Image 1 (cartoon, one colour):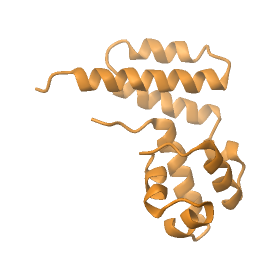
Image 2 (cartoon, rainbow, N blue to C red):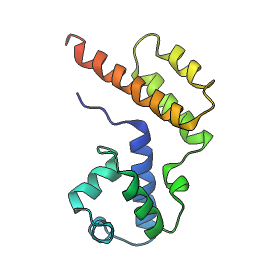
Image 3 (spheres, helix red, strand yellow):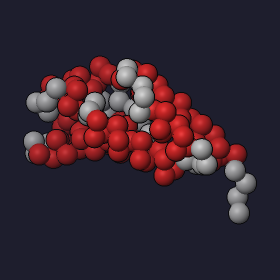
Length: 129
């Protein structure tokens, strides 16, 4: 089972919402940034991480800052942690609690990526019922 990283999902949702507010189709936005429509669809679904260079281009076209598009604020971190806590096995809540003590945003992002890797590995290794 492939899971969607909650941060990628949130960024994709912001891209989609802003694109729709601006009256653009996925194809139009994709063409403007040099992506394919199918790539754009995967970015908006959060199924694929958008490269940073693309996020910067998208932000400019959507008339927001890259930080606004990424949602690098406490509310987005809280939402991502809630998704992780609900998806994770026993002990995940302890990891989520430890997360709140990390002051550096880069370390927080790395922490979430690692935690999702662990959740995915445990989910794949779990025997089917």
